[in-house]
Structures are given as structure tokens and as C-alpha cells.
Amino acid sequence: MKKYFAIFALVFASVISVYAMGTHAYDSNSVIFDINKSKIDWTTDIERSLDVSIIEACAYPSQGLVEVTLYNIGNASVRLINSNGQVVSSDYVQTDAPTVVYLDTFSTSGTFYLEVVSDTWYAEGVASF
Image (tube, rainbow, N blue to C red; front, side, top):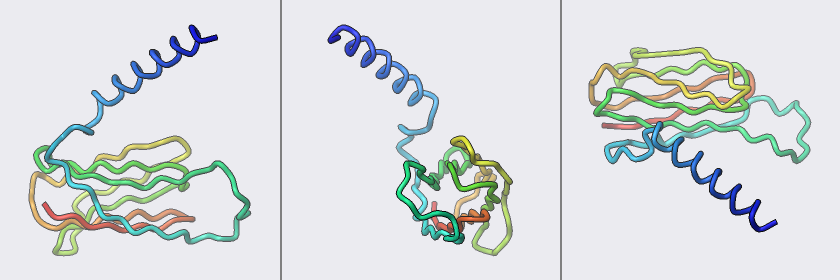
């Protein structure tokens, strides 16, 4: 039994390290968006369940990208808005599986607002870089 656990641990560690290489997790110039979330639709059953909703965002100014990770919030509209109120980049995605959306800042700096809207969730965030 210990041998199977050791094999599983090694495989798990390998998968995690390969995944981390493909993400921007180690970019020292990343900026985390400060996101406020609120659930819109409380008509669904409020029982405790294992369903977890994820709304996270991180900006990579050196690459001119904002990475938004979404999961289990339904079909969502994602918009990146500059300080002048102009929509810089947007996308519409389905979040039944973990989804990563990349929005382009066109390598400009400043204050950016992120807006995520679905039938059941609303989230907004802000980051300056």
C-alpha cells in the first residue's frame, strides 16, 4: 500500500510541476486584481455542496495580458475597461469546466477595471500597473 501511495505522490507532484511551468505563476511582475464578488441568484438550493465557484484575475504588464480564471458561474461576459471607461478587451465564455480567459491591455499601463457578469454572479475588480 505504501508503494502505491509513493507512486501516486510522485505522479501528482510531476503533474503539478508541469502545470506550473505552463502558467504565469512565477512571473515576478504580476499584479493581482482586487475582486469583489456577489451572488445574484439565490433561488437555487442553498444546501451545502462541493460545488465551488472561482473568479480570479491576475495582470502581466510585461506581456500586456490579464488572465482571468473562471469556474462554475455559468455563461459569463468578461470585460476589461480602462480608466477612460472604454472597453479595451472582452470575451463571452462558458464556465462548466475551469476556464482561463486572456484579455489584451495592448501593453498600456494605467488603471484597469475588470467586470465579470453571469446569470448567477457579478464580480468587479481593479488593478493599476
